Length: 121
Image 1 (cartoon, rainbow, N blue to C red):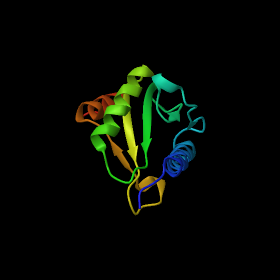
Image 2 (image 1 turned 180 degrees about the vertical axis):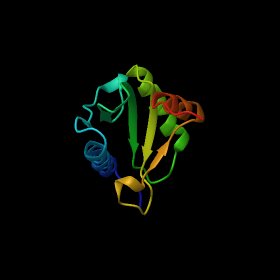
Image 3 (image 1 turned 60 degrees about the vertical axis):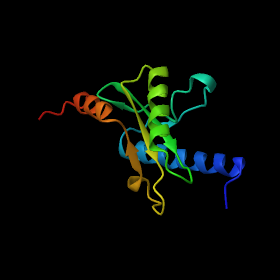
């Protein structure tokens, strides 16, 4: 059975809340869901930073995985926010805990993230 538009929006909103609460409780208590900004969307999670660098998180709870589309959207929204990078947080089927969800990015964005956190080889 496919989702209706209303049920898909509700699932997406619930997933955004779960992700925001997880990062708020485990990273920074200023993190929350972002207010929707329309055509120049800046991602779903507000106030996510690493070493002062803004990171965009785009949340996806969809019935079929579309990692390419999710990463493309995260990158556009990162540019809209003048953020260092954008990550897609994708709901993992059969896994309810927020820490079990996927983080999806390009290798280039992952290297930029490693540099932002000061990782060395």
